[in-house]
Length: 175
Image 1 (tube, rainbow, N blue to C red):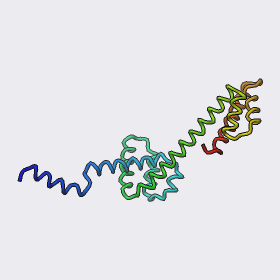
Image 2 (spheres, rainbow, N blue to C red):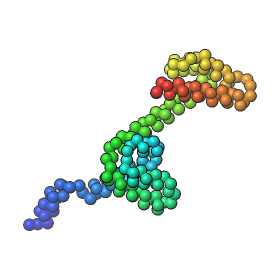
Image 3 (cartoon, rainbow, N blue to C red):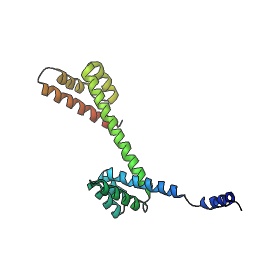
Image 4 (tube, rainbow, N blue to C red):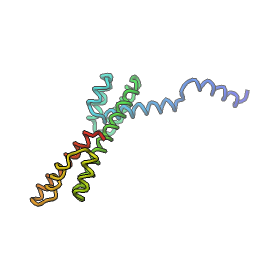
């Protein structure tokens, strides 16, 4: 029997179980998922119903500052993650990221409407009132206070108030 024949026979047996490289990739992925939990809000950890040891390890990771200690704690979290179903954690983190992205979108939308209103005035107020379903009279009043006479502090305060009003309207619309 030649080497080639033996090697192919061994490959047939090896295909029944994951390779060492595949196991390593899965281990690294679980560790990264556990580390992502450390960056997540505490409310998310409470909702996930994780084992107490894992919650303590993630909480401890947040407190560490030494590079070596952080690395050891991450490896420990990866070890603990082997006993946990990763699907609900992935789903919760993805949902959290979507919520963050939506909040950033609403913030940018309110910012752009504020800038347009301050720069263009009435045409932008009409377009914004239609797009966000807000009262144009309120926008007109805030625009007049933000661009009118008076002290610089009052104009800046009115511009911030205009932004808050637009942000609230964008949040209510759930864009």
